[in-house]
Image (tube, rainbow, N blue to C red; front, side):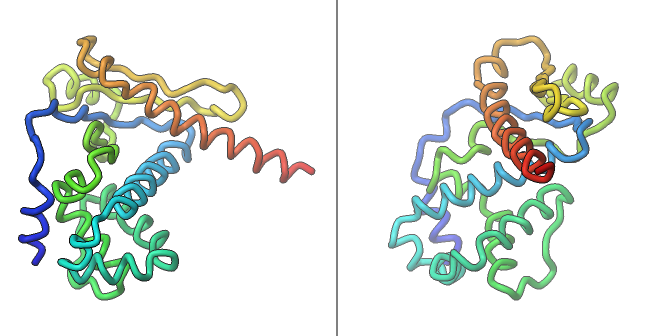
Length: 200
């Protein structure tokens, strides 16, 4: 059934540009991870919102997950986040959020076909981030297109993550800096509110 679903969803034009591959060096200790989780949550939500009824009926995992979405979506996002960072997979997924998370990890093309605006259609994070020197080598040899350096304390300074790339027009033209900047800016603003409320 999954094969049928994937074939149905893959009726699309694959001639578009390859996604920009990026890494993250997080000096804040929290913002990179929060951004990663927020990006995954947004992608999962976009995919579930756009699933056609016929697609859901064709796959029991998707049908069951969509029916219970409100209670399991956050758990699935957390697990997808963990599996992504650790490049792992579950040996025997049993709980619903586990089965959906593994389905998500195994079928990125089906996700992109159903929801072409998911972030990883345009931008793919490479895990784990290497030391700065090594990242420079990876940019130079084309293994990644660039990397973000998140400053120590964006909450206090308002400083945005810097994107360092090979200098070509491809990554710059992709809009990756604006996209990642919007994600991190929203998280920094939320953190400022939390810290302000803690101080009252």
